[in-house]
Image (cartoon, rainbow, N blue to C red; front, top):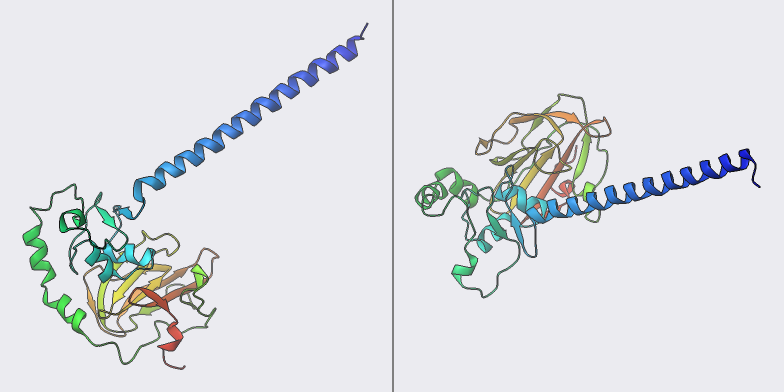
Amino acid sequence: MQSTTEIVFVWRSTVLNRAIHYCAILLITIFVSGCISGQLQSKRHAGHGWYTVKPSDTLYSIAWRYGLDSKTLGRWNQISDGDIIYVGQRLIMHNPGTKNNSQLAVENTSGNASRSSDLESSSKSLEVKKILTAPPPTKWLWPVKGKLLNTFSIQQLNRRGIDIGGKLGQPIRATASGKVVYSGNGLVGYGNLIIIKHNATYLSAYAYCRERLVIEGSVVKAGAIIAKMGLHKNKLAKLHFEIRKNGKPVDPMNYLPNN
């Protein structure tokens, strides 16, 4: 016969084992549900060769995120420079090749007929034409004065530009004249971000801003104050600065003057 102590011990062990078993099942269920939820969330915005426009997106921010040239992305989707894109619109993210024009048409929940005339006039804007036909900047300015914190590396996502240290709230200036094509915080990993289009070839970007002082569509001169320096996630005041040529990251040090 088992003693009372032994029976209590066996009972407690059984209860404990069952509790561990149920907790393990619960954790696995939560983990799997989270994975499925994340996958479903991801599938809402991307698929095989296409992308669904989200509220904070612009053609330039989408091209920037995927390392594409905005002109090329626009051509694939029959979108001219200056055209508006809409939430829910599906963009082709690869060369459609020999598909006919009806297959290239971008889905638009707002309807294309009502926007065609407006977009036609906006795409012919004088400011857009000036930017597109402008020659490459002959002189680039440093966006801020400060210590160079790292160098360019195409292999590392967080180093496809340079980081410049400074003081919180320090003025950030446009490195060359151009048009602001993005001013927002919708690109993960960039915080408050400003992208300036200098001509048909070059873009520059200014990330981790504490405050953005220009809006999309603004035309700025070289040296104009466009933002104030903010904090990176490591609590260090700095500016992440990039230059892209035909959508591809290039080393800003090859363009900025020697200090």
